[in-house]
Picture (cartoon, rainbow, N blue to C red):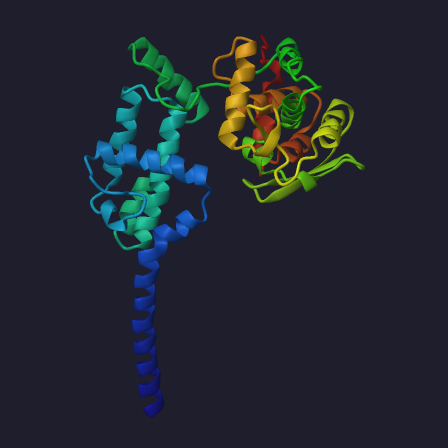
Length: 331
């Protein structure tokens, strides 16, 4: 009997300790989640949560206050998505909002604010796939409802050979910025790196002697080693020989003409937009250059090769590019 009483006492103490641990974990669940995310991801999520809060007429921070989620139901989430469609938001923007709302609703459930059953219903609110999106946009166009409101572009630009050549021709090899730009294009347009990967490269990630460039994929947690040749290798070697980058591989250009410090993702995006203006594209983005690279390489790589080259976690994206080869039109 004494042993049973001891076990019962221990169980009771463990339950009490467990409840205290749950309370502490609940209080920090949002902060812990956000500490693991990149600055750009948090900036996007905060905007999306602010839009959702405004729709709900909430004067609360859905990104840091679990209690702000009290009363949020799947019906409200579903109504928000449907209203966004009627307001002419781009489908990608709607999908991104839903993804963020579901992620934070899950955190609120861990904090004991959103009921588990309600969370399951919130997560059942679906976004729009490619084919569904086409049908939705067709109906919106027929009803004279915009289909592009929001930051997410409906499609991507694919540069033609002539457009790419025009942009490359502006990279003057006799100037520091020209040499840096040639490397930038090699990374984005030839290797198809994500802008975060290009900005994250360090000078010692490239070995001029062997021509090997090591790229860490922050999105997937993997590493790719490219053995460069031809124009790509020449561009990086010329850049290293003349400009001797230290710290961040891609250096920022100053008004004085010298290269100094690093270049941010936003600055890279701005530079790419300026390239686009040279060929009549007002909204050219770094991802357009990655899309162009994938479109071209899909014609001579199999699914596994394309997946490895671009650092995708699954073959689905690679298969999509390869299957699209029969219908791609490059203007």
